[in-house]
Amino acid sequence: MSTEAFLLSNEPAARLGIFVAVFSAMALWEIVTPRRVLSQAKATRWTHNLLLVALNTILLRVLFPTTAVELALAAGESGTGLLNHFAVPFPVAVALSIVFLDLVIYLQHLMFHAVPVLWRLHRMHHADLDFDVTTGARFHPIEIALSMLIKFAAIVLLGAPAIAVLAFEILLNATAMFNHANVRIPPAWDRVLRWIVVTPDMHRVHHSVEAPETNSNFGFNLPWWDRLFGTYRAQPAAGHAKMTIGIGQFRTGRDLWLDRMLAIPFQDDAGPYAINRRQEA
Image 1 (cartoon, rainbow, N blue to C red):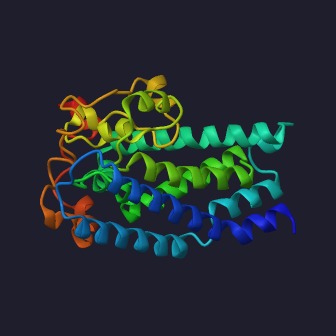
Image 2 (tube, rainbow, N blue to C red):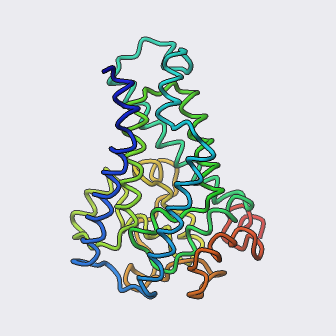
């Protein structure tokens, strides 16, 4: 069996298996050593957040019959993309692709905070009143679809190898669950880890109700972009135990239900969190 055929036939099982393993590990870790006391009923939040995951999974399969890995295979076969026009050693191409795709995700995340109409979509992710492993998969279906289109464009432009795309997809999903987990990491370990990967304490700042903190620490996987582009904030002003999670506009338990989550982009105005709105004010 060729490498391409192996990737196509095993991608769904590999991604599902790693998702279940990482999710289970984070959920158990949250029980053993939680970082914060949750403010909302876990059963309600988890039920609706996981229902959203199921809905997004179904919609993605309907809207995008071709996966990112399949697109990368097609681009490679047709010689499309920058890497397919230069004699780049395969390991270097894989590493460059993973780093480049991570930068694209960082810039996309920044854009969803900067443009008010896009912030309307993204604020559903921030409207969670607690911060745990399920928050890492809580995204509006329209945002998921737009993100997929941006990712597809980046893969075709670069000509990323299929194995790099698969590795990146798995890494991004795993690190999103890790850095949203309500887990306690010793401060000395966290200081070292956040030079390599976005840690929960680093990303939790991004989920603060305070707008300057919300508009910081945009990285999901690699932590370097925030330091490089000046969006890094080490700690929340109120401290991790006392900081308030969420945004100011949606703060009731009913807002955590699936129907209310899906309606968030169409309610109220963009609010004070979008970067451009704050600059205009």
